[in-house]
Image 1 (cartoon, rainbow, N blue to C red):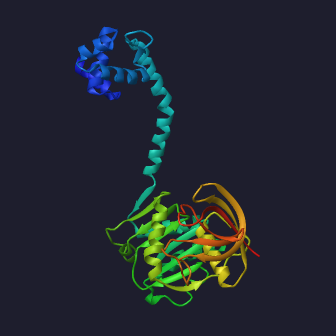
Image 2: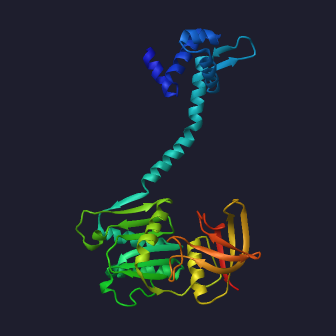
Image 3: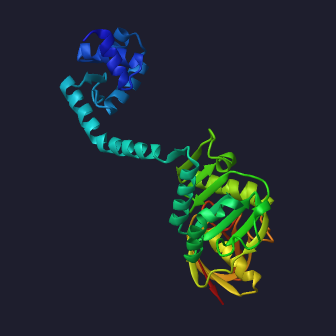
Length: 348
């Protein structure tokens, strides 16, 4: 192997050009003082001491500072290579795990070109929902997902339904198909999110015509889900008109989805029910665990009229606890007192 190739290979192991010069000089001497290496490599003695400590940590050299002057010894090449091979074998399982995860990540997005496939995916997503579902859809397409929506409501999913292009939407068309229904006369993208983890976005023109160059995207991504929910709740939900609200779910109920718990608490409070809530979570300021039970005083939310949130996705409970009032938010809460992991609601 020529000198240039050897230097290139060493640089692949993280060596700088100066480090290569120093190490190769040391190999030629086998063992030497720092001043000898510095003169031969054209670097300062201080640099030799510094780089020798780094090379020692990486298994390339040994530094004997028990003698005066300090001696620096190159480890036998077979030991160095054996050490590198061991390190590579050690990290191989972790690299393979990461590689598998990268392949899975590539499958987190699906591009759809067919309108019929869009509706098929929407039906599948609705059927997979467990806790919370948001859906916007043209009113004249509601019948295509009616049975799936009704089943979701029956199993206790919080269904937020926004019907668009509602000029031809008859009264009561969405009865029994959603927890809260709003309507808007304008067209908008079809947007679906399921449990903040998976969803679909399709351009409005794709729903209107089977012959279009537009495409829909299905995603499965824990960071993207909340973004789409935020867009739905923050940009489109507020401009639509509430037309139907289902009865609240039976109590007691336990939820890790705090927004769903807040909506249900709101519906019960609107019926003048006395509520208690058991909270399991963490104090925002200290991150210490907390578990307590208190009386629900009020809610802050932007889902059910009348809304009172300061920003659209805000959802919190205010509880009386130990002669004080504390506020409880969901995952990622930062303006409340407590970040809840689980909320149990019951009648007092």
